[in-house]
Length: 172
Image 1 (tube, rainbow, N blue to C red):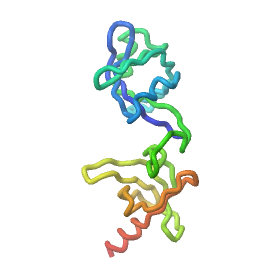
Image 2: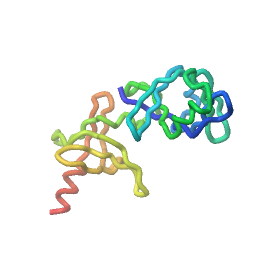
Image 3: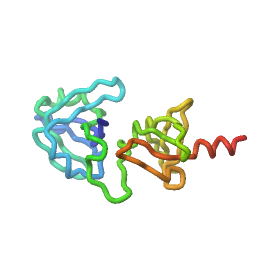
């Protein structure tokens, strides 16, 4: 199951160990529906499980209280860590034609003729739009739009794109 990033820790707030956190989700109302979260330090790879005891939506961010953090000094060491949880692919509600980016990671990329191009390893954002980072023989970027990814089979775990072939043909 993939991990979903729903927030990131800014800094401690107050004297009881509350953490001031940024939203990294379009559905902040879901944050208080879970009792356990993982926090992840992307710099070191360290992961820790925390028990959520209270959450307060606060201006453009939220304040979170975790059982394991009872002072600002303890909370300070987690500045910049991501707040995440496990979720099964296809488990979250969605509109018709909508997909969550985390669900794309690990999906196989195939051409329309069925040849395997590689696996989605990340999603990159740029001023030009969203791109799928696909690892095959080499790392390639595929624009994530209907023109370049016309078919997506979430339950089956693959998507269809002929973009890598188009790019190769245009370079010759």
